[in-house]
Image (tube, rainbow, N blue to C red):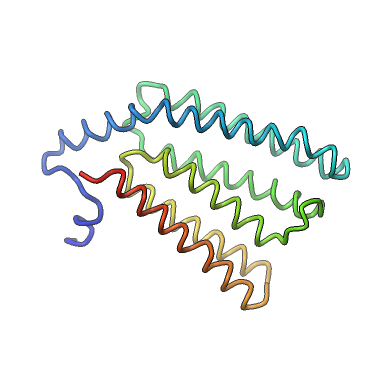
Length: 195
């Protein structure tokens, strides 16, 4: 319990803690929204580029997943500006879970298309790194939830590697690339929240 208290810092007074979290999450909205605009630009770039290089069936599948990601990003962009957002810390987990699920199908199709030349495990590792960097900013004053999300993503990457039945060295090194990065980003999120 003392370790958890040291890691997940909280103000002694619950009202002060709630006010701090609410203020931090409200202050972060403009940055989250800017990040979502960057996300829209990234996804839009794939929408433009994919038909130029991928076969039509792959481009069409990626278009469908891209449009779904744009809807999710648009909803999150809108929702973070709503008055109830600061008090609902788990909404960030739900959003990133939904994006990661849709992104899985996108990157699987991207890999199947063969246009990148990257193996699937490299694409999933890279994309999870990007998504985790986004999440670090979005999880303002929600360190526990972010740590939970970090461990979910580590489990997700490791599970994907196991399902792919990759050679042991490939799976171990890919996990070693991702897990320390994820823990470093968790540390950054924790340091930002230092009280």
